[in-house]
Image 1 (cartoon, rainbow, N blue to C red):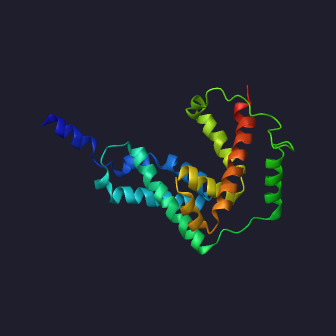
Image 2 (image 1 turned 90 degrees about the horizontal axis):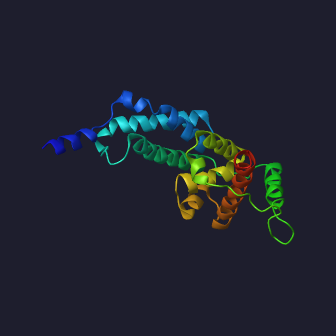
Image 3 (image 1 turned 180 degrees about the vertical axis):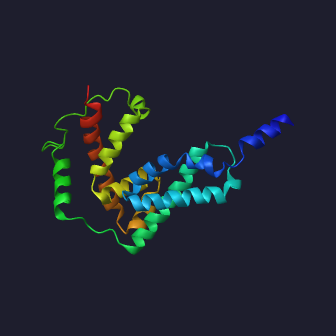
Length: 199
């Protein structure tokens, strides 16, 4: 009987005050994905409202933060879908695209091998636990062209399939793979310079 009471108590829906303490975290997460303060604030507000209204669905199997992040991911996906229907993903100006291609090409020699082999990153898992690392990661992500960052976010953060990304953004699978490749190379170079390369 006591065990049941404990289980029920742990699965109680958090109240509004308890949810509000996660607003800052949720806003940072949404900003990284959407790059728009107004849109980020909107999806966070929608997330908190959905959590309050659907609190009875909180099972207690995960932390409140994980539960809210799951709701937020769906709100971000909904926002991206609405946005892609309203505005097709346009090609950015030639200069950013050219400079991105040149930056990627600069990493490789004519024979296709690395000009400078990637540095030893030591224990990357320790970096993932460091708050400063995530600040550097966010800064590196913001340096990517918007369309490349959007595809990377949809794939690696929101965990959409290539097929879903292509459908939402109206791009081909080849285009998607190229943008993901560029995003990963861009992040690798930036993190190596700004984080792993630091003593």
